[in-house]
Image (cartoon, rainbow, N blue to C red; front, side):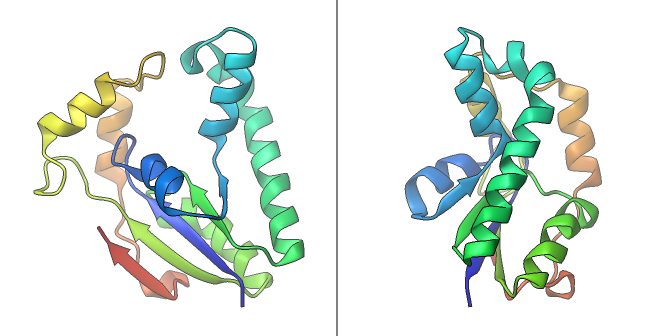
Length: 157
């Protein structure tokens, strides 16, 4: 049975770093696509986001579908903060008989991710900013993943 790892966490919680350094599978990430295309046109992530998000989402889903058709393992690197946002992936993965593992990254203000460290990480992302009200809303609406959603294993980092 092929495996998909779904990463869950707010921006700058360590998801993308983990995906780059710990996984050997394809990483499905709209952020990676936006960053690469924007860079090719001499733009920052922020400058290209509005124009490229729709394209990046289509490319990510085409790649995910190709992986599923071939039964290849892959990692989903998105915030995936709510049951609803995770469900669209889980439903498709279950249809293709994937084992779905969830890796949950700490929220800011926790012992594992002190607020000062989180702010440092956010500030270090040149050309990639998220408004404070959006970050607050993400944290406010976060729903802890459960096995009832369809995960075979949930790992809290």
